[in-house]
Length: 317
Image 1 (cartoon, rainbow, N blue to C red):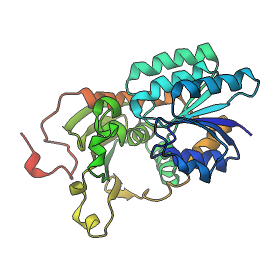
Image 2 (cartoon, rainbow, N blue to C red; image 1 turned 30 degrees about the horizontal axis):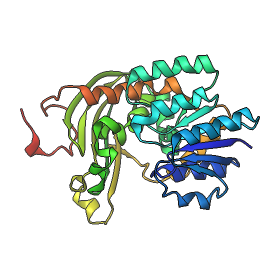
Image 3 (cartoon, rainbow, N blue to C red; image 1 turned 45 degrees about the horizontal axis):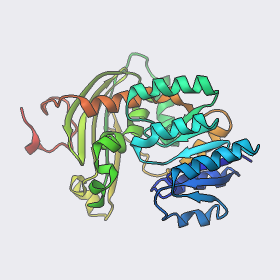
């Protein structure tokens, strides 16, 4: 049985990590969050030592190490801009690290963390849940076994409606979240580059607080993408069903269905990591470079290849 510590216990994604730790037969021994709304822990590990001050959490993890009962893994579910610092804490504490997406906000952070991995002998693992989704695995195998010189046309749309709270929270602050393409899109960009290869061209058409869109030319795909947290972005057909989320991945006009099957992907991720097959630090490079470019690139006029959900009245030629 492995012992885990959790940073960011009050966050939206924390229950998936709690569930994954429990489902893999392991134990959560310590948790930290500056907010104390963490009653969810009682459903999983009621005996966990909980801290609202990072200094006391740090001291507790160090005390466990010095007493010969060290933590094996620290799982990080904190706000995006804190991931780098919290990963460093884990490595300095001689603990392997499991970190939510996005791993970090800037590509150069990965280089520094890689150096720390070599110094400490510990490893950093990413949660790339889409790489473990059955439909995405089938698509990856399909492309890998197809004609090596074929370049595919791909459309990706992901709309996940958020209320007014979203822009007030750290998620609405691009300096903390990295913006919408980073916060809700990074795992899609990881999936695309995992399947279709390196980025050759990265064009950004829209970059707003709640919407982003652009065009990616990959080694084996031409990708038109659209991301939004605005309910009004949803197609009318989706609104009529009462749903607030829309995922659509089309390959050469054929829809790849992957709306379901997300509930146990964190557990699958933990199983892979515990078996020594997790996605390591350097596997994040392409996706982090992609979203960093999207965050900083000059906008391009909306013409030529742009996603169909980009409204006509927004076109500036």
